[in-house]
Image (cartoon, rainbow, N blue to C red):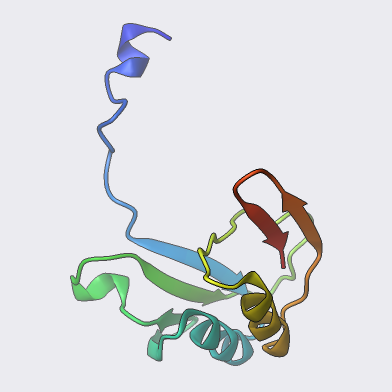
Length: 116
């Protein structure tokens, strides 16, 4: 790496303010993500629905925002969300009861990834 490219390592260019998730059905996705995250659906602005805090309210922390789109997803999603859970079976059961589905499980020594 050049000296220029390493100059910013360890110094973020900003802070991650929000995760935006494209959805087709805003009401259905809002109910799903509210239940999964244990947060109330927040403010709705046109095609945007916050889950919990809004990124524009100035409060600290990461915001989750759903964005209604008209075109269905084609190919691989451009984002994924990681959760740390106490009990993977209970967590997956909850996700599945909310309409999610297990697609693939990948296990390593100290972690498991379930693509749902």
